[in-house]
Structures are given as structure tokens and as C-alpha cells.
Length: 275
Image 1 (spheres, one colour):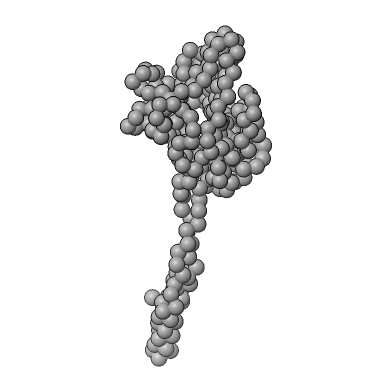
Image 2: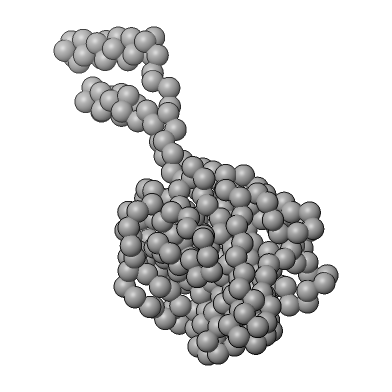
């Protein structure tokens, strides 16, 4: 190795003194709840808020278990076999909405990632189930689920495929309805661009990845989960988490190491001149 190569390698050692690392800053799942869906389980999120509108039927949320809900499949948490359940059925237009703020862990920069799992049965014509990622965390009344929306994913009754609502409008994903459930990873590419990765909850096999532009503006500060008059079948949610890119400092080379590098370069320089 000649002096030029050694000098280059030494400078690289000095230059790379930090690196990015994906760190989980918030996570929660239905294992963290005793016998009801309420409170503030897990870490890194704000407390749940719920709004229901029973109209002339019924709507609400509950802690579901596979032993008592035969339609709960692959989004249930091990080892409890629990998930967060919702229902909205009967006469009139019945609705249930669950809100969760991201506390100090809002999605703000490239690489920040949000994960959620959800599954459902058949959805009646005009009903819908899904989730919305939002700026701020407005939850004053029924229908606030898509206030300050930046991204929405869900299934609309009467359709065949899952839909996305973003800065480009309504997008048909081409993904057929499945009662196996979906694991969804949403990642920021920039302040206004995202990547969505969708997996089958049965075996976590890959289904689709797509990039898009967000609607609205601002940080992503909360999620809302909704069941809007889905009908007789329940909708289930689980496994929220947030990861963020954080720089991890690597200790600077010690003065002793710097001195060794300097002496080594000086020695090699003298040998080169003598030869």
C-alpha cells in the first residue's frame, strides 16, 4: 500500500464518526391489555380516545380473542391471541373511531416508519374500514377520523380491492379483499412523499410496494382506526409501532491513534524518499 492509499484510508477513519440506525420509539399490541381495549398500553404513544355513533344500531370497540371470535385470524398477538376489535351494524349509519396520538414520536423525516396490522370480514355496501395517518390529533366528534389526513388506507364495501387516499386522490391498489389480514408498513421518503409496503398477515409474505405523495401538510402526529357501518362482520386492528432514523455517535479517534497514524505516514514518507 503506498502513502496515498494509507492517507486516504486514514482520512476515511476520521470522517466516518457517526451512522444512522433505525430505532423503535413506540410500540403497542393487544397483549398489553387485560380484558378491555382502553387506556395507554405499550410505550411511546398517547392514550387511546374512542368515539361511537350508534345511530339506530350499535357500534363500539372491544378486546377480541380468537377463542371467542372465530373470525379473528392472523393479526392476533401471541401468546394471548388478542386483537383490538370493532363493530358497527344495525339500522342507520353506525360508526366507531379510535384515536392514538404519537406523543413525541411524530413522523417527521425520511426513514420514519409506522406499522399496523388489520383484518376484517365482508363489508356492506357503503360501509368502510381502515386507518388514517394525520397531522395533529383532532378527536372532538364523530367524523373527525380523517381531519388533517395525510394518508388513508382501507376497504370500501361494494368494491373488490383495497384503496389508498393520498395527495393523488383515490387509488385502487388492485389488492383483493382477504380475511387473512394485512401487515402494513408506511415509511416517509421526504416531508411529502411516502413508501407503502403491504404483507399478508398469514405468513408475512410480500404483496405490494408503492410510492406516492401525501395529501395536506405537516408532521404525521396520530393515527385513527375506523369502522364505518361495516355490517355484521367485525374489523380488527393490532401491532402499532414507530421506528425513526437516529444518528448514533461513534467515538472520535483518540489522540494516541492520531499520533500513531502521523508517525506511520512520516516513516513511510522517509522510506519512499530513500528508495
